[in-house]
Every structure is written in structure tokens, then in C-alpha cells.
Image 1 (cartoon, rainbow over the protein chains, first blue to last red):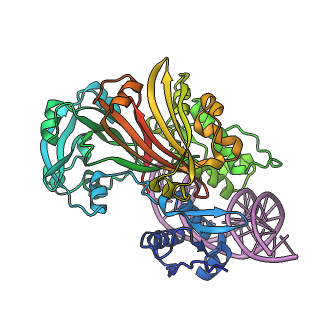
Image 2 (cartoon, rainbow over the protein chains, first blue to last red):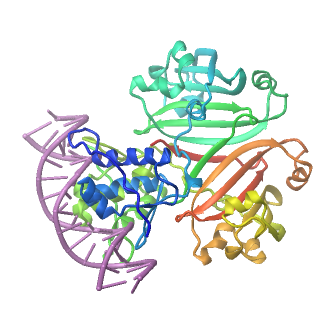
Length: 247
Length: 247
DNA sequence: AAGTGGTCTAGACCACGTA
DNA sequence: ACGTGGTCTAGACCACTTG
């Protein structure tokens, strides 16, 4: 006999937060904090719905969300279990800043270039503006303990462009928040090539040594392009880790 | 006045395929085949549910699935639109073989090493077997037009291990299919380093030139580990492209 | 005011795995 | 036979956007 895990939550029916979200978030926290072990059995959905006093479809919606994130595994006729720990990894859009903070480091950023430039045909096409129209081009160096980690080059639409000061203090996506801009998805391409002289100097690596490159085009939920990125990373200090799911 | 796109589909209520799936798949195809343009308005969910003779929750489930895949964009009070084309990109677990076939190439694979070896502590831990227990170690070289593209090194559990012949003909994941093994998710780490002598020779690149590395641990839906991979790619011929979504 | 998508309910029936 | 999760329904009410 295995005792199933029972999530302790108080549902607030007057909150503007959807009920299923009020279940998803605490459950995710409980897993992250180790209140429930990987592989552990979870209370069945019928009992849980009754206990939390929500309808079964609503509870199922919450559980399905957790399955989508790879946190739960459900089998018909068997039950629901917390996914094996190995699977737990953020599927989030990785913001370098965010990643480092999560890992317990305190990264610093230096803005080495900040200027409005006329857009090239290619940049204009990607940003959805007219060729020659102005765009903010920013180059930043992100370091950790004074060790340069990455060169971040970005083209940004002028109407949502952060100030020079903001970029020094915060990550790019945090600068977007006050403007009600939320990045929802991004296309990324990861490759490698030898470091150029300029890159080698900025990253303090040998000229021609391998660097990781990541090109990104980021979108809001509505499909608006809000960022073009051409980034270069020191592979000794950074690699890309993520979880992929099949359909 | 904008005429909304109406998906043409016949729902088979006797099929074992769920109704929502019978809507998702053709809709995905319609978008892939360009029957509906990016940005185009889609029939509202009430009408569509009535027209297809399914309940609104069932139709919503189908549409939500397409939103999750980044194919549709929905806004309350506004309507549903096909996502901008730039966003369309497979979120799938990228199988190199699959990627190349999609791109119109016909890759070839050569198995250069195929042997059962005792598992090291690390491999045993990842595979969930006892240290020293046997595991199949396979090394393959994938080429395209006789140009070596990647070195694929894998550790596989013995009970689902493909035969030497199978590996020559098919991709690894296709070998799993007849065994009822479906890879559902994988943790991947992408980095770069200079090519070793051996790698340089196999990939026909210069010793010390940058190569892309990808380490992968793949899981079934139930969380079982079915593959450990340590792959090396020629960056001139391959890069990693994918779409990420925020939560 | 009308139309859109977002949330939630109560209950039905089915498919799967175990005993 | 029983308990699990998977699918589906009909309808209610709400929040947001546009005319």
C-alpha cells in the first residue's frame, strides 16, 4: 500500500486567478521544493477534485498542464506519479540572466554599444519594419565574477526600446515587462565557429577557439517580433540545456 | 469584412481516434500545406463546433492544442488567427535523420562500432541499471552525399537494442517503433569544443576546429530511459534550430 | 449591445490495468 | 469487478473588444 501525495492548497474562489492555475502553481512549487519525491504516487483525480471542491474537468485541466510541463506522468488504470527527477528541467525560454540567477550566480552586464541605426533589408524584414527605418542596436557583455561569458548583440524595435540605464541594471526581458511586452516564443539557431579577433578579445579567449553562437528571433503571443539576437558564448562557461517533447 | 477560414473535415464518430485529434491533425496539415495563410482569421469556435457537430469544450480542446504548438493565436473579444509564418517551426524532438529527410536530403548511416560493454557507473546511473551490467554501445557516422555530418555515439538498454542491420537502414527512433517504444521527451545539452584527432578524421575536418556537441538522455512517456547519446556535428553542415515557448 | 474567447460545472460513458 | 485516467456533452457565466 502506497500513500499518495495530497497537495495542500486553499482555493480562493474570489481571486481573479483561474482555479486550475491556483492548483498548477503550488503543485509545481511542491515538486520544486521536494515536498513530493520523484516517482511518488499522487492522489487520484476524483478524490482530489472532491477534496479541493472543484469539478473534475477543472482539476484535470490543472493536472494536464503539469503533464505538459513534464512534471507528472499519468497512466490509465494505474494512476498519476511525479515524473522521474531527471526529466525536471525548465522548458522555459532561456534568458541567460535568469539562468544564471537561478544557478545562484550574480551576473553583471556592460553595455558597450547603444545606437540607433538604419535597418538593413534583412533586419527590417525580420522586425517587420521598412528597410532603412531606425532600429536600436545594442551590444552587451555579460560577465560573471569579471569573467566575460557572452557577447549579446540585439536589434530592437524603437517603440519598445529600453533605455541605456535599464539595460545596465536588468536583463532584456525584464526591461520589456513595464512596457507590457511579454515574450511568448522564439526561434533559435545554435551553432559554432572560431572566435573572431574582436570576439576573442571581448570574451578573453584565444582567437580561433570555438565559440557557441545563438541567433534568436523572439515573438509576443500575438506574433509580434520584439527582438533579434546574435549572441556569442564562451563554451567553457556556458552551454545550452533544455528539454524537448514530442507531439 | 474578412472571411474566416473554415476547416473542411469529416468527423468519424466510430473511429478510435479522439474527436479533438480528428480536428487537430487536419488543421495542422492545412496550415503546413498553405491552405490557410499565416495571419488569416479563423472561424469562431461557436460556429465551428456547431458546423462540425461537436461540443464546444471538445472543439476548444483541439484549438488549444494548436495554440500550444504555436500554430494559432487567440485573443478574447477578437478571434482566432493562424500564427505568423515565422513562428512555424517543428517543436519536435529533433531526430537528425528526420530533419534531413524533411529537408529533402537522403542521409546514409554507417555503423562503425557495435558492441555490448559493461556499463560504467555513470552510464549505469543514467540508464537505471546496475553498474557493470551490459549495455549496447553503438557508434555511427551519418553522411550526406558522402560528406560526414555527424558522429553518433549511443548507449542503449539491451532489452530494446536494435540489431546491427536495423541501425544501418533506419534512424534509431525508427528502430524503437516496432518494439512499441516511443520517445516522449529528452534532456539535451549543446556545447562546442575543438575536434579531437579521431573526430577530425571521421568528420573530415581540421584537428582542433570547432565541432558542435550534443548530449542527450531520452525518456518514454512513463519516464523510462531508452537512450544516452553523445553526438558530435560538423558545424558547417548542421546547426540546431528550434522554437521555445514560455510558460 | 453584440460577439469573441476564457472559465467552470455535473455528469455520462469508455478504455485500460489490476486483482 | 473495480478503480484508474481519457473523452465528450450541454450549458452557464464571465471578461474583453468593437460598433
